[in-house]
Amino acid sequence: MVIDFNNIKEEQIMNFKGGEGELDTRNFIDSDNKIMMSRLKPGASSGYHKHEGNCEVVYIVEGEATFIYDDKEEVVKAGQVHYCPDGHSHSMINKTDKDLVYFALVPTLKKQ
Image 1 (tube, rainbow, N blue to C red):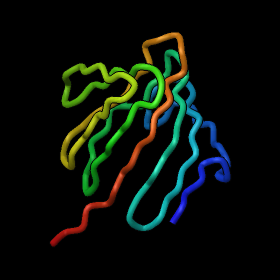
Image 2 (image 1 turned 90 degrees about the horizontal axis):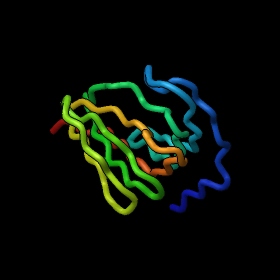
Image 3 (image 1 turned 180 degrees about the vertical axis):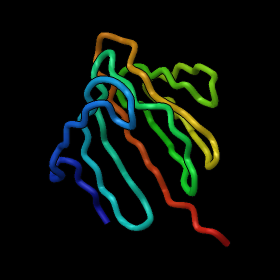
């Protein structure tokens, strides 16, 4: 299956998950996964939230992200990945003056 983000309508979301500023995103969502190609504008952030029943993998394509992960600050640069496992909390902040472009995957975890 090919997912072409160029064929998915871009949404502009303000204050994503209680954060600040603008997030531009193209999302593919099915019953098992949320797959996103997104752009977080300078000074914008996603709100601090806990993952329950899922996890999140964020690959930084362009720019630099500051994550607050379980109340600790981490800086993640282009080519690096931030991982937030089930039961953990995080937020993402663009503290730079350039757009932050990232690819994120949020799989629903199946109970065994």
